[in-house]
Image (tube, rainbow, N blue to C red):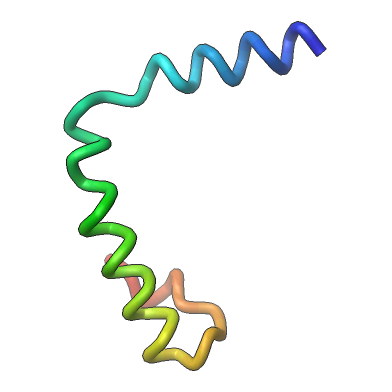
Length: 47
């Protein structure tokens, strides 16, 4: 369990302010792709 916690903490430390700035745009893009593909797989549509 400690190993898992340490890995999660290390991953969180990798999140930069720039990444957080891009989150809203990325979310909207993914939501739109999901809607356009009727909820089916859409990852291949996102670039």
